[in-house]
Image (tube, rainbow, N blue to C red):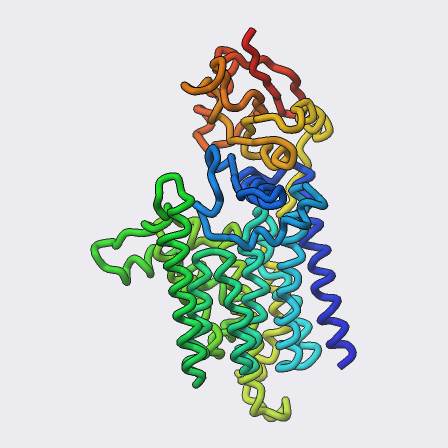
Length: 457
């Protein structure tokens, strides 16, 4: 009992150290990006200044509430006001993801015993879905992971009101989290708490419709919800839209593999179906693939389903020698889970340090605080904490209404070897070559970074 309690405390602490170290090192090595760490820092910076969550990287004056309904970001405002730096967001995300291991380890320990429970907890902490989120900057989904974990744990224990209480704040994380809340409501309804379940589903549907149909369009420059048309029926068949191409089944396989497919023995696994189906409806492979942060919120569902499903499988058996072969084999799954997790999560989240990193930082330091700067995607999060940053090559030409013919961005920070975002590399190089003709003069260069300043001379 003592081991179990200490482990449940120490595991989140150890995971926070691991997640936080990787995230901060990536930021220090300039491996993060404006899309999306810079965008979220701009939004949180707006809240911290008691203003709107405006992200100029997404567009001039664009309020993030017109892109996604994520008012939960305001929770980070007091912390960011004390520590105005992109690393504040990264460490907050690390803490949220690490906290989600507590309910997973707790349920696994209760259902499987201290050793197996510890193995499942470690496997969860090492799961590729969480590490993919750590390796792709910061996202609001970090709030959804612990909320989902505590909600699903409560469902597994039959604590219906607690489950709903943990699930409802998901409606403030992002508009698509209404699917998870509705799934929790359906589960509660199916387990006999019909009024509570129905009320939860209605709250989820109502809040989602309000966010998508009213709030987001009200803040969106075009007066609409940009992500409404996520997919188109292939051949008029919605089933084909959901099941093909076959790459979607690779995602399902990789999701279930770390659990030895034993998550399928628990009805809790059904909670993963609505959000996964919504992603599969999209034509964009980024949404239904295994990269970035999209699978992080599914990890607690699957690992809690593993603990519950394996617990159901082992419950009737009392003696190991009396168990049939399939049950004895299943008993080994928790031991294998951390091994499989290590094999699946990206082991190269932190790449090699770029050459002359100190030189690159010195060049960026020539951009003064408060400047309006158009920055390359990989340089943006190095500047969003102290400047008004847009995405290069936009806003680098004098606008029609700009005073004295000035461009919106009077400073430019670019990489000597640009990538292909937001435009193909050839166009990015062409835009950089046109800077002198647009009135920009080179101020400093080094470490693969060049800074320009606009001058009327």
